[in-house]
Image (cartoon, rainbow, N blue to C red; front, side, top):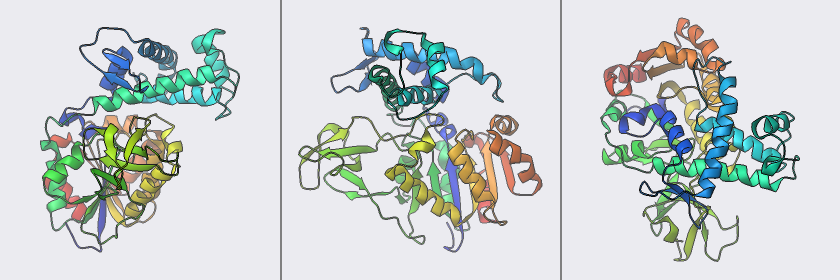
Length: 396
């Protein structure tokens, strides 16, 4: 990998995790809706035990809400460009967040009230007055927590295979290729683990080992640092907020990655017991609420670092991303028009279908970018992609 005066970037989405054996968005949605083996423990977090046969009332409530939401919003999705598309768990979390925020007075949205009536009818625990219904807000928050917990536990596994990542490793090892920064929208950890096992030094934003925990660093690395920036734009299944047992809420909280599987019994730098709050990782879930969460301190820093890397890059490779995140799409568009020297490579099976499924902001610019020589495509699954073509693009 290259001369420090030229930079490139790689952005990957969930499409690169499927060849590794991780469940697709559709598969995760089915698991979430079924609730098989799921239960809520005394820590108010949700777990999965495949051998469990006993019904958990909290899971029953959450899945009932999700199924009702899905039944209501599925027909509306048919009106858009997504032919045959049904609501997935990201859509359901987004809607649940909207309803919960409305009930708790966090948003003012005049369409939510009528929608609530349509979904749940009048009366019962679903009846809501804006900003004054803790019961509805609680139901929706618990439903959202249920989805988050089931999803991250399904992703908490080792990759079954990693050969599909060789195309990226080849680019990182090619001395003619620009210095690369990697941005990923995935919550699982198989890509960074693969790079570590391959001997690639990455910078993920976390510092050195302190009592089996690496803590988030407020300081970024220099552009000429030899490590590869690895930026998880939607968080990760191993990012937790820790609070010392005798700590003060918020003031003493620190974001960290535990180097042990026992996240409930990590210790601070000075040896104090600390707990993960609220027992689930820091990962963004939800179709259109992600870019609201981008404004939080942690994720605003994450995205600022990614934007800084994009700003110095004149080549961007995108793989496994469906262009459904409006915030990420906006970053891509701004990057393209930031300089006439910039070029984009999209690698995906079924390129024409991908173009048609993109949100309008990307879809309506696609053909023009191709005509202007800005956009190149490789119509191939990542595991079958020609590494020479990718490296050639990144060194051009």
